[in-house]
Image (cartoon, rainbow, N blue to C red; front, side, top):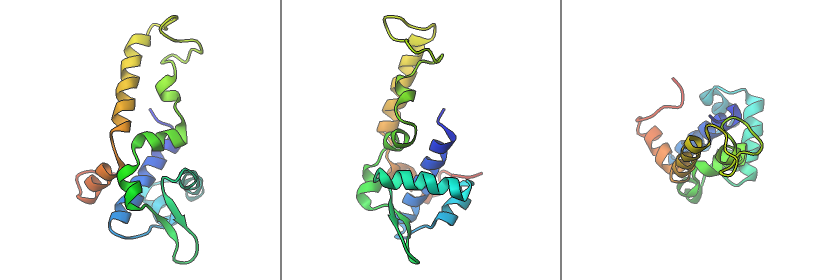
Length: 144
């Protein structure tokens, strides 16, 4: 559903949030290992997320990545997906047609509009905090 970049981005943010809830910073190597992503690729994703102010990045020997309480509680999955994949998933055609809308619908238009709307609603109503707490409490996992 999401690009591989977006999947890694969501996992990275959740890992950073979980560690931030424990008042710890996490470095690039730890993140890449935890989410099973190449380090250079992870660095690019984290740079994009930091630029969008979804996460914070501190340089230097005691640096790393972290999230403050406002970020943890205020960032939704919609913001992460938007920062990485944009909004095509909410506006695009299920069959990839360029001119698909209510006036000229594709065969899947009506069914896909409700799926898109439900997805957008779920992503906008799910905060990083909710998911990070589930991770912290061992209810969910990032890797199998």
